[in-house]
Image (cartoon, rainbow, N blue to C red):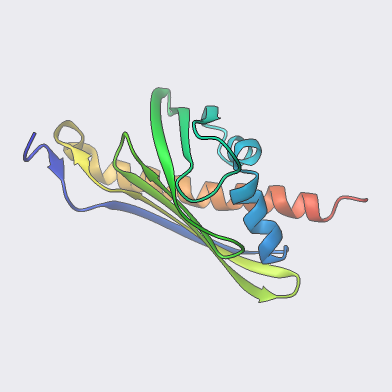
Length: 159
C-alpha cells in the first residue's frame, strides 16, 4: 500500500466563545461523550464504548456515521483527557484526529477550539481533495455551532 495515501493532512479548524465555564464544557464533550456526541454531530448514528469504566485516556469507542449519504464505521481512542482543558480522539481503524481545546475566558465563558484532521487520503480520494477540505471545514464549523447551541441552551434552562 506504499504510495496509496497522501501524507499532507486535511485540516478543519473552528472556535467560538461559549457562555459556559470550562469544566462544564469539558464534561459535556468528554465525560458525557456517549450521550452528547450524537447530539452535536447528528451524523453519528451509533456510538458505543468498547472499554470498561468512565471516559478517560485510552478509552476505545466505535462509531457508525452517515456523512452525505455515505456510511462509515470506525474505532477511535481517547489520546488526551485533560480535565477542563482538552480531549483528543484518534482514529484506530482510520487515520483521523479530533482535538477539542477549552480555554477559560472568564468565570462564565470559555473558548472552544475544535481541530479535525484527516491524516491521509486514499489514492482514489485525491482528485476530490479540494471538496474534502471544504467538507471538513464546514463540518468543524457546524460541530462548534452545535456544541455552542446545545450547551448554552442547557446553561440557560430554568432549574
